[in-house]
Image (cartoon, rainbow, N blue to C red; front, side):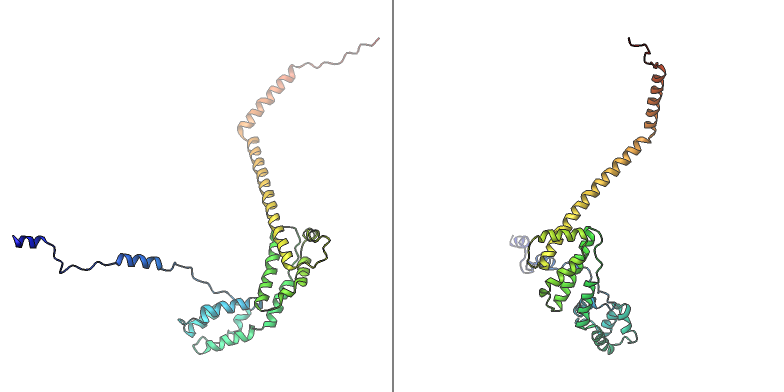
Length: 268
């Protein structure tokens, strides 16, 4: 009897402790970093206005990476250069020892703050004026001006003290209608407007022009759709047959009508 009871009682000597693999897997899946797209290195053609952005991105992703060898860094560097910048390193062979020299050569060639500032100012002054009053051209001018201001701030130039010059150069590029609206906004004020005032004005005007443009586009599309429907109805077979019946009825009615001439009796 005791032997039978022993057989029925589960043995605890070989029992394994409960595991928490499911909990660990759930925690690992929750802590697992999401998949991010691969970062593409920017291209540098030798334009001074692009140098600072290219230098900072390449230095953070490639030059300072401890998982890359110098040969790999050199390959990434050469594959990122085009135009005049590629000619600077054209005759330097890709070896482990040449990378540091090539990187220093490129920096000494383009890391010229005065030339970079002049390039940004030239881009601002040489920007084509807005010829027509539309949101696209005004937005391009505003984006380009703000891009130059951000670049000059990065170079630690005193841009905050250049409001008068920035407002003057930007207003000169505006179309006549936008320039007139800007003068109306200033009114009789004798205070010097800041560039932030002009930027807010351009932002509001661009939104207004976009709204008007969208409304006009919808109106034109409705008219075009109505015109297509009218043309389809006018040239459909059913419409032509109905027009033929109406024309025949009109001819029949005209033949049965007698033309009466006014009486020529004399008035006494």
